[in-house]
Length: 262
Image (cartoon, rainbow, N blue to C red; front, top):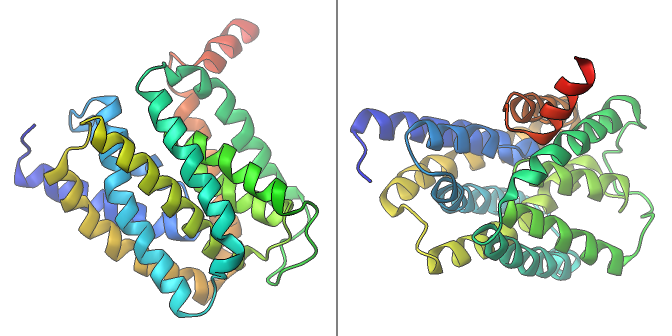
């Protein structure tokens, strides 16, 4: 596929904004995937190309958080391995199975997540006692990695919420470690999509440069403002993604609600 300079510039801008938001709260795909599809990229290629550009943005965020000492790589190594393995399975499944059924489930999960941050206990800035153990952490991230490779929207937000609610991390720490998990799942899905020949390289690399810059900015803002910005941004991105998914007339949940309300 060929794209004009104007389209490339707009997609690069979308990638920069998405990289910034993704580094702070996740949900950058809410911006880039619709932008890619609006430019005429088919759905599977849009997801594959998005994994390329988001891998760069997430790498930048990981570097920025790690440089300031916010990431314990030994603690997150096994969960990241689980996210990698799960994402490979999800990306393989995406190329063989219609993922539309997930579109009906995800809005319910996002609303639950937004409710947790709106009405639940205020997340701590420091780590607290985990409710579940290491094995549960690996299993949870493997499942979320599969979701990220298979469908994707909100995966980073789900990971951050799990780290806060179930595994005792402070919100900034959870955001930092989520970038490692997200990077693992992004790279795994990207490798699988590359093997499947689904990635649009020129477009993805142009967006990747912008996403890398956005990831650096987002990580800087997350460390500067902490949970004061991350918590409301998680809620906003969750609700925005819910609205976007429900706006699709083909969404199973939308169809059910229409039938129920009528």
